[in-house]
Image 1: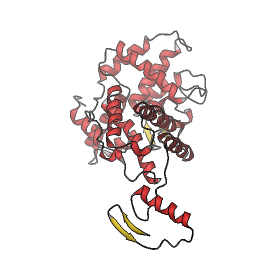
Image 2 (image 1 turned 90 degrees about the horizontal axis):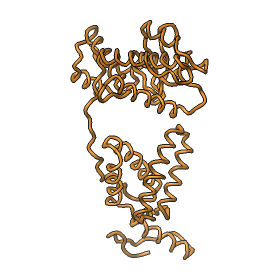
Image 3 (image 1 turned 45 degrees about the vertical axis):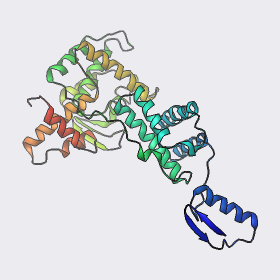
Image 4 (image 1 turned 120 degrees about the vertical axis):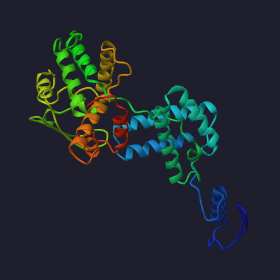
Amino acid sequence: MQGSLGGEYVRQSLNLTVWGAAQERIRGWEASGQVGVVRHEVATVREAVEKHLEDADGRNLKPESVKKIRDIIERRFLGYCSREGFRALKQLDVDAVRGFRNELVKDYSANSARKRLEYVRAFFRFCQDSGWITANPMAMVKPPKADTSPTLPFEKTQIDAMLKVADGFSAKGRFKDGDRKRLRAMILLLRYSGLRISDAKILDRARLSGDKLFLYTQKTGTPVWVPLPESVVEALKASPSDNGKYFFWNGRCLPTSAVKIWERTFQRVFELADISGGTVHRFRDTFAVELLLRTRAETSCPTEPSVICCGDGRADDTREVCRTSPRDG
């Protein structure tokens, strides 16, 4: 063959004896815009999304992770492409992806939009690794500026107010007065263990040995070991459950559904306790800050113990919360 492609002059033998095969190879080079590179074309965005979802299923990801990919890539992103008329994958340039980002920030907070854009970034990285596109348009799209202000821990008076609310909480549920004991036990567990609500909700009774709690966190798989005060252990034992294996979970509903129920319960607790800006995550901040302050007073290693107990990979947020916390220790 002889000619130019992508500004490069080419004169070389294809080492082929069939004219049709030679033409097919040349067309492949022309499609990719590079000599010697054949791009594996995927005709539509929908096909690329389907293959991305198949890959997610094949990687044995957690059901919740696959569910998020389907929601963001299949429902939101593919829906956006359909509305805007983007059918072919090659139509998705930087401007097209920026349009999707701008749509996300209208429906979500900056932090939530940033997290969802990471799924889109992974989708285009998958397309690029598969040879369907030569460049990742997400590489040039800046995420929305997120609010990095740390949340503050709860004050002791706020914890006491929540426990008071728990003791007078509605007894119309399945366990009647036992619902109050369950709520008190959950508040104390979150306060003194630093667990995520997703781990606390499905806490197995076998994980508690005496006053010692050990488990692997659901989100990161990090081993967590922490001693619990006697009052917390007693509250857990007094908390009723319809499944003898777990403290709070019935073992039938999805863990994510159970977490949402508890999050709604805590929103009501925060309202009744008159706690502005209350979130379940602030229990972890409370635990981490107290442990950090106590560790600083006892050792010369001020951050690692609290990070390990919380099952986190970074110490920056814990240190920042400690600097901004008004707690007097």
